[in-house]
Image 1 (spheres, rainbow, N blue to C red):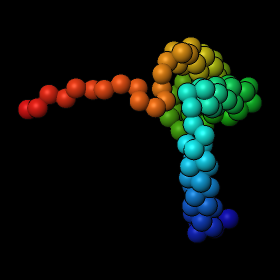
Image 2 (cartoon, one colour):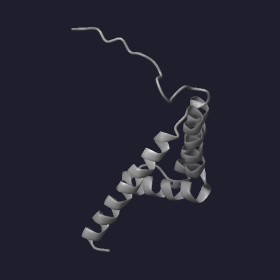
Image 3 (cartoon, rainbow, N blue to C red):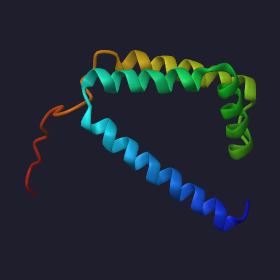
Image 4 (tube, helix red, strand yellow):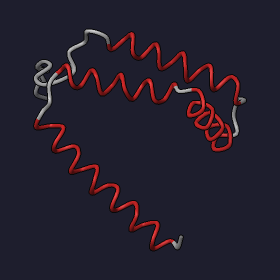
Length: 101
């Protein structure tokens, strides 16, 4: 694949993602958002995908080793899922008061 074709393919993926995001937003709710976050977490923790991501991280950063990254990815994802459980993260979450200078 040439660089131009790769860029075109990425542009097409981004355009498709924007269409999907608009459809998602029309049906949005806290429940749907929670389900989507859980789905992403489970996909990331799938053993073969987790291994691939760990291998990429080690190559890109030059830090750590694959086995430790696999465990870290798994544990951090479980921790994030735990931390997000029952937390309002959709719609109006709250107001932030900003003091004038």
